[in-house]
Image (cartoon, rainbow, N blue to C red; front, side, top):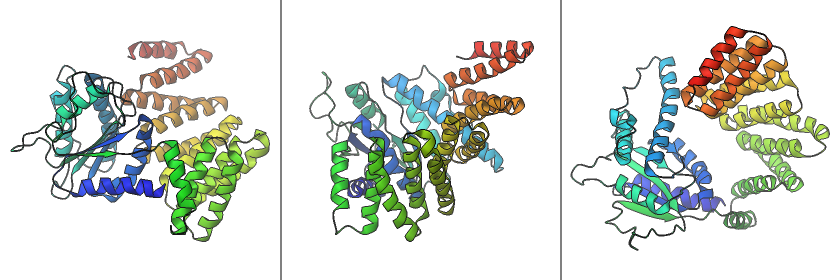
Length: 417
């Protein structure tokens, strides 16, 4: 599987390193979008370019652009807070065409990307790389026409200078009635590279098995393939098979002192025992492995794995109604999510912190967590989460017979879109 991923990595790096093409159009299945993001993340970390990722579903151009703009605004708000904390000046106001819902969708998106490029410190040292990988494309022919219009530019004065785009289209998309067979010729799609990939389960398993059994592949690479294979076994509930592989990986990564991958193997063992029955019998082993994974992740400075382990511990304690321990780990996960600019996980943690504090009759702490969560949900425009958090507060205030606060919450609920 590493070869499969390495091929994609090399194609992307070659695209980013050249000066002629603006768009890399990746043909893949809808299910492969999330995996593409995972492959692109380490490329971003090693690159001098500035990446912005968007995974919004495509239904029609207007709705798609609206969701992309909203996603940008959510991330920009978190970025603004970090700038303020660092004493740096805030970004200027977003241009009117970007926030005008009546504006032409292509014009809105081009204005947004231009604004993002203008925020870059050194255009000579890096490009703006916009990654548009919809996880679902409802109208392939309409999406293709939208992409074609979006990347159109004047050669003498291109709007997209110092930009690169990585976009996705369906691997086997049906043709639109009005579309000609030459849909991807250089005229229709100027400055474009086309790259089809296959990350189907059959292709991944085949590639993984080949690499694990290939003695010409370095041992470290073969064991990373084994880690992926163990994750697949766990996802398909082949828990005992997955456990055997995780144990082998644990021994190897401990020996070579690869703390990040040791943390991943230990986390896998914890997840296996958290899933095995009877739950009480395996709970202590799950906690044991998760706590070992925390130590390894800290030593390996792997914050994403540390966040995953903290959430696993918190969720396990929550399932077993150990409210104090669950709250403690959700607080740790919330701090990590804040540092990683992961607003969705931060929101989940705040809601669960409030639930745990409520069970412990720590009303002031529950109030603070749910209040902070409702404020964050409002800023992220997560209206369902905002309503849910406000209902938690309302129920707590009602039980305490705090009528004024109940009325205030009712008024706030009515204002939620």
